Image 1 (cartoon, helix red, strand yellow):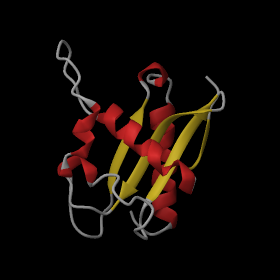
Image 2: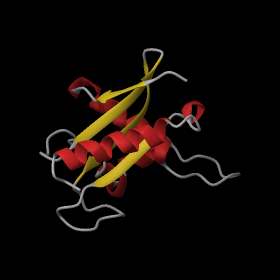
Image 3: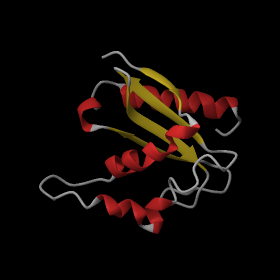
Image 4: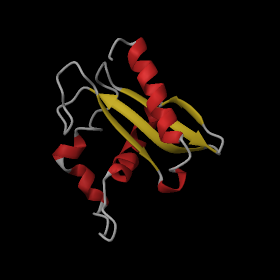
Length: 120
């Protein structure tokens, strides 16, 4: 599958809502929660005001002119919080684009960006 990875544009920040919802784990056989679940404070922290913090970094994967996946990092007090100097990752792809190595490529590119910015 052909795809490109690029920095997320400011006007695309709103798509992080879709990808946050896609990242919610739903066990097999359990119905998906309503999309409104992303408005819970413990999930909203991943996207609220994204792009306003100096260490907010986001990349998207694009295939056939459509954004199909995203990875974004920020320093926040979330489920995986380590300390106030270590950014947390969020990554998500639409289901039909999983299993093609796109997520791995997004993670690798993000790690390179973090290293360049001194955040690793």
